[in-house]
Length: 224
Image (cartoon, rainbow, N blue to C red; front, side, top):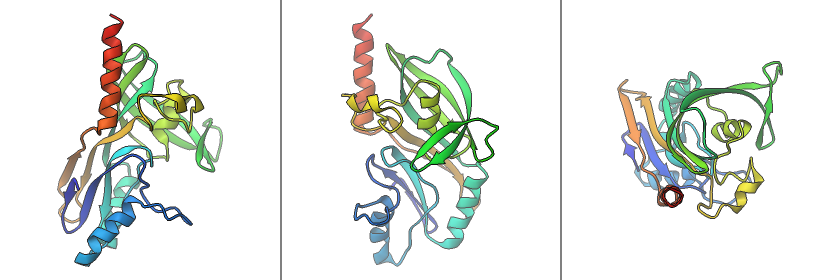
């Protein structure tokens, strides 16, 4: 638990844990585990947004329908601040920028399209380079929109896939330094649905992500 009161809960979701249950599967999810934890207190858990299964970090839930409705309206309006840390394959040549792509969801994938496609959805994010390695970049990403797999799909489209992202780049399945996508929801800021106050949550990097950055740093020093 990163934050909890009578209206909302923010948890630190580990990589590999589903945000919500998958139909027909008995695999645990953040939602089902939180429901079990709150049930003895006669409280509910209702998810307000999602992060990818193989990403880690801050995930927000409401405890009542009214609170959830208020939070969902914020996400639909793109007003919460959502910042991620990601390690990308290759060195970015621009220190900061904005990416805009258009995608159409096909099954579990975001397929790249153009603005002329009437069924495509606009995806926008802002990024800044935090650190460069010999063949990788640690970046901070702020979502402007909120498509499924958006960060992974957009950086893949520009030729810099997120390290470990075997879904959009099959070659990443052989990455030895991390066993999942190197993507972490590090910062979340939203307006409390009851008080109107701004709530800011920071979520520290998990050990496997720290290990990846540490090993890339060692590689960088070794090449000097």
